[in-house]
Length: 91
Image (cartoon, rainbow, N blue to C red; front, side):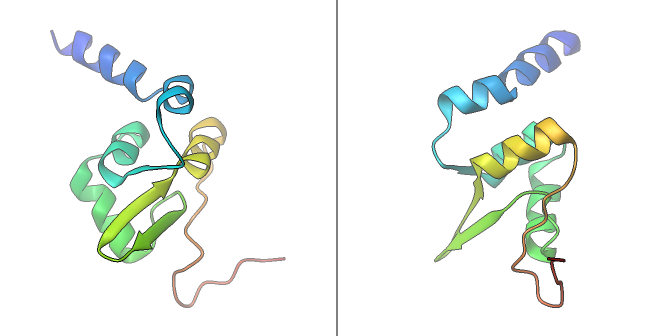
């Protein structure tokens, strides 16, 4: 039974499915699951400025940029949010 759940969830968060069903942004919870970690871990990484994808904060809402999530899923390389204080992006 556990294998079925993982298979369905893997399909639900595949890059092809995300491209077809998500708008320009997605929830931190869904993006965290797509990356393979829990909602709590996702919000912890957002709070520390270390979520592996671009994150937008609009008022009290936090959204993950879909294009950034797809790049991370396909490359396996994090694309940290550049808004974290003290971090510089090399040119």
